[in-house]
Length: 157
Image (cartoon, rainbow, N blue to C red; front, side, top):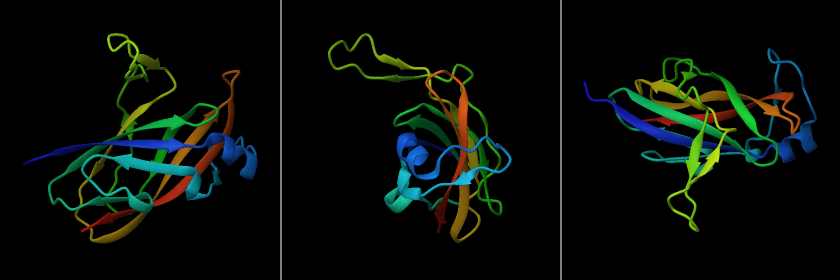
């Protein structure tokens, strides 16, 4: 069976979220945030209006990294509906990614605040499915300062 892997970047504007929602220290009851503070982009699917479009019947594995604009943040859970998305598992134990350095291509910038996760999509359901990304904002002192959830739509066709 053919399997596709899609890399997805979840950019979270932590500064705007904290300013509009405040802090919430409950991991089991995260505050819901405005989807405009969370943007999603990736390869192999439509990312317009935060919709991820799967049009393949084969299993699709997609990996997402969270990058905070402001304080760093980490994705700690993904709440799916139906069988489109399964629970995540940690993809990168080091939690690092590399950003190209135009001034010195041989020495890319190391980002230690990025956690890699992998979700599986069976793409068996049709239409839109609402899912929630749960993440925690980590303050500049390294303490977990807030838990949040952003609900997005994933379209399968």
